[in-house]
Image (cartoon, rainbow over all chains, first blue to last red; front, side, top):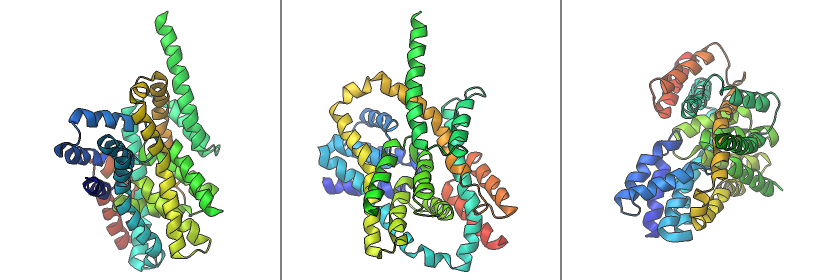
Length: 179
Length: 182
C-alpha cells in the first residue's frame, strides 16, 4: 500500500514538466481510478491546496496521502513527488558547469534565456484572467510590483499586506451590505 | 552556519510562497540571488530554463539546485553539497506539510473560516505582481544580450499565450534557433 502510494506520486512528480497544474488530471486519474478517493473528495482537497503556500504537487500529494493513510501516508506521498526531480537536479547541479562549456550548449542558452523569461510572463496572463482584472483594479498589482522592484521591498511583505488588505476590504464590504 | 541559513531561508519561502511555482520564483530569487548570493542571476535564469525541460515542480528544482550551489560555492565537496540540497528541499516543504496536518485535524473549522478566505482573495490579486517581479528582475543585459533577445522573448510569449504551446517545446525551439543564430 505504502509502496503503491509512493510509486504513484513519483510518477506524478516525473510528469510535472514545465510546472504547475498540468498534474491535476493525472492525479485525478490515478487516485480516483484506484478507488482511493471519490471524485468529490479529490476536488475538495484540491480546493484546499489552492490556498496553501508551498509546492502544489507536494501539497496535493500530502493531502491525498494523509486522507488515505494518515501521517505516514502523507509523508510518503509527499516524498514520492520529490525524489525524481531531486535526483535529476543534483545530477545537473554537479555537472552543469562542465556541460555549459560546450559551444553548442552556450549558443542554445543565449537564446533560451529570453524564452525562459517569457515563460514566466505567460502565467501572468492567466492570473490576470482568473482575477478578472480591469484597468481600475490592475493598479493594485502594478503598484505592488513597482514597490518590490524599484523599492526593493521583500515579496514577503507584499504577501502579508495582501492577506491583511483582503480581510479589511471584505470587512468593509460586509458592513456596507448590512446598511 | 550555512545549513541553518538554508533551513531558515527555505522555511520562509515555504511559509510565504503562495500562488503557485511562478509566484514563488520572485521570493526565491529575492532570497537566493539578491540577499544570499547563492547563485548569480544568470544561473537562476538557466535553472528556470532547465526546470521547464526537466520533470518536477519548479519550487523543488530551485530549492535542490540552490542548496547544492550554496555549499559548492563555499568550497564543500559534492557529498556535503547534496546535504545542502536535502536541507533546502526539506525546509521548503515542511511548513505546508505541518499546515496540512493541522488542516486535516481541524478541517471543518478551517473551511468555514471566512477570514482565511478573505486573506486569500488579497493574496490572489497580488500574485500577478509576484509573477511579474520574477520576470522583470530577469530582464537584464545578461539575459537579453542583443537585438535577437527581445524577438525571442516575444516569440516565446506569443507561442505560449496564444497557441498554448507546452513550455518544453518553447524551450526546445529557442535552443535550436540559438544554435543557428549565435
